[in-house]
Image 1 (spheres, helix red, strand yellow):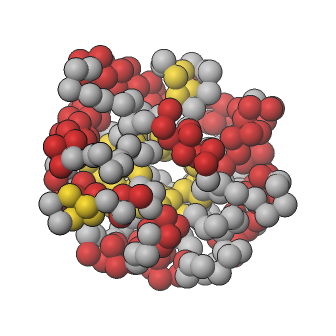
Image 2 (image 1 turned 120 degrees about the vertical axis):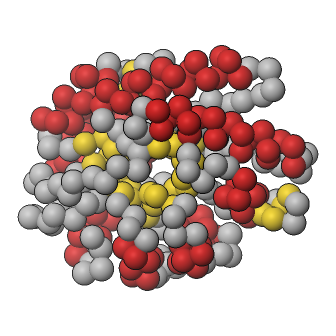
Length: 294
């Protein structure tokens, strides 16, 4: 988990995009043959493989497993995993996959707004070229020193990026962990404060069901209570999807369908046998075989 936290600190703030309804894709090879389920993968799941073997080997591996769309975690100065956006898109197209979402971000202060917004202009243009629909802020920094004014700054920042994303026919959102439920502002958890104080027309939320559960909350109840604010979902478990028994994924997927959630992504952060590829494949197979998964 600590590696993830370090990554998020470096990627301190980010926002998300696209409320356009996707076309269902057929899987290409691997995994459970012939499935038409719309199973996506957050590529952070294979972060070490990206470092060791490069993004092309990762994309080929993911396509063979059966995943048909991906969410990236490798943007820098107009390039995605070091590639020009047209090159990255072609590699996905050749494998029958799409990039529908991205995790990326910038920290913001009261003094760097112009610089940060210019950074977002370039990021939005980059991901528009690959056809992504969502740009997702992976985390924010909250601690005992954070004030309600700081939270308002985050909300205003998110809303401003949301307007920019919407102008490019994309959508901007926020991805949670469990710490958003630890701190309170104006008698609300940080998570509920964000949910209540962003522009609901311009900022969506990407629920990470594992972290909601780890915070002692019920992901299904959140989906029921706020049916329009969660546009994408992270399907995650302690390790491989379905292996821990900590989460009952069926009611989560049923409520996702009831809410008309169109895009969701597997994320695997820890691996039973220290084998990321095996764990990501196992997660795909579990979901591909489950009748309630769409």
